[in-house]
Image 1 (cartoon, rainbow, N blue to C red):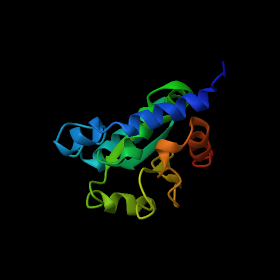
Image 2: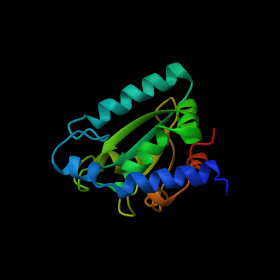
Image 3: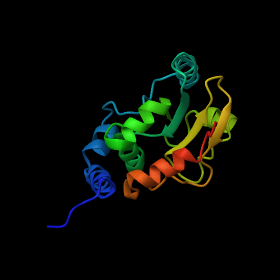
Image 4: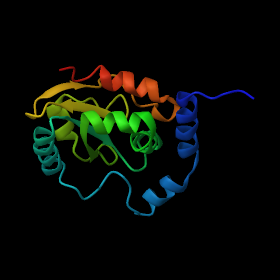
Length: 161
């Protein structure tokens, strides 16, 4: 029997999540998803920065949408396994809804985040709210096919302190 590595299991879980149409159907029907479509992105980011300062962490701002399968897969990955633990240990995470690239685009632009190359995309902020790094080339836009280690490499390349 062949042993599977944690990365293979994580990638399989991401593919399984993205293969189901339940999340996309729920989002289309107006059911809540991980990206709050009514949230005040600036207020949420400010709250996350304040919390990060208290906890000695950085802020991970994840731009995405509930219709985006890669966004849903990345969100699921952040909630489990080695990746979830590593993200929780280092970051206060805030999700920002971009709708159909018609919401919170100004917030993304102010942080230097490029939405045109695909979502999800992220920015890392210091506990003082300063942008430390962003994805610029769609590095996470294929999150459902990325393994845990590949996602970690992207995050580790941002916000080195």
